[in-house]
Image 1 (cartoon, rainbow, N blue to C red):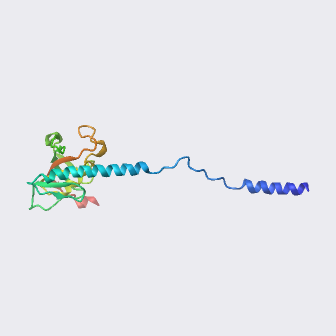
Image 2 (cartoon, rainbow, N blue to C red):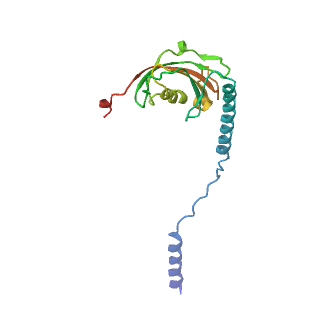
Image 3 (cartoon, rainbow, N blue to C red):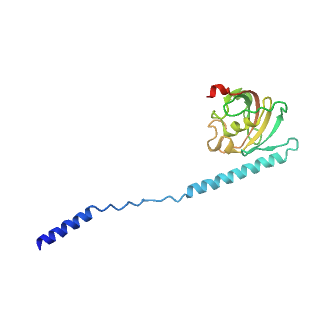
Length: 185
């Protein structure tokens, strides 16, 4: 009988020793409420900024505004109907631009910034500027109204442009150097 109890004890011990440990449950779970509230806050901010920009545009009877696919509006100060070549990814462009607040207070002048030469879609410039230049032809000057999300966003530029500040920028496209396709292979 002792042998029988001993064998059953070994079988019971072997069976329980080989079982998988129970999975540990997370101590806390995340509800995603911070992300949802952040998204709602950003939507409200964008709606507010677009309303401000729309009111400025509504009071301007001189210029004809164009709504871009990228979420900002602009008008041409100088349009070049003869040259229909716009910059594309990889092209090098030379531009001048300034940056102003919606109340037309100058943040950076053309002289502060100087002539900027950069490769399209390869530089760390603010998003609105990167996409705006692609809408222009050589010799054109256009004024763009950017919501803060297309400008410097939440962080500003950590110098003169504040947090969530919508911007006006007048950009002149001076030159386009088309990318040499032979070198891109």
